[in-house]
Image (cartoon, rainbow, N blue to C red; front, side, top):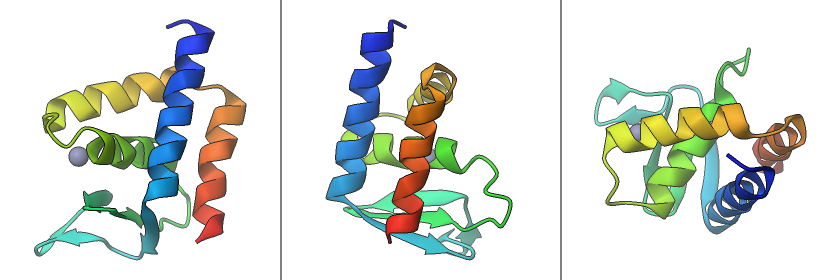
Length: 102
Ligand SMILES: [Zn+2]
């Protein structure tokens, strides 16, 4: 992926996170099932892990669900993992800033 493309994706993810209400929860659930995060309309719930393990990946993943509601879970997983590897340290810092905002 070219640097410019990664930047475009970063901006897309940020605009999604700006559109949504971000909620840090101890254990987000879909029904009774505990999950790392989920996107319900314009609400993105993220598991507030003390070690913040994979929190950037979860943010990207849920933002993609918001942006592309018709994508399959598999497509969202693949794309979010790919974007995580393409994003720069500054991009990841920028994403983590959203967690402090709410
Ligand atoms: Zn998902």
